[in-house]
Image (cartoon, rainbow, N blue to C red):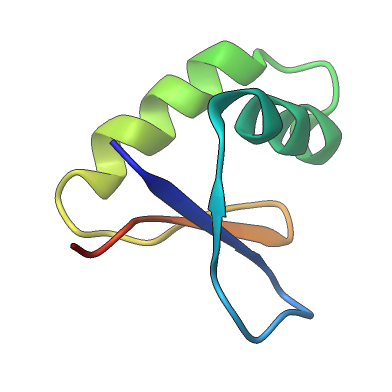
Length: 63
């Protein structure tokens, strides 16, 4: 699944790789479980939702 991210101060969505997704989530949630949070984000965006974690939004890339 391709995931796009956008910080609150950005105007465009950016295609983001798995390693970068974990880095972003780590920065946003601190000591919480980044892998668990990413799993939640992936499950939620399958349904077409946009999920916010801190100041970053995640969505499934539209084909």
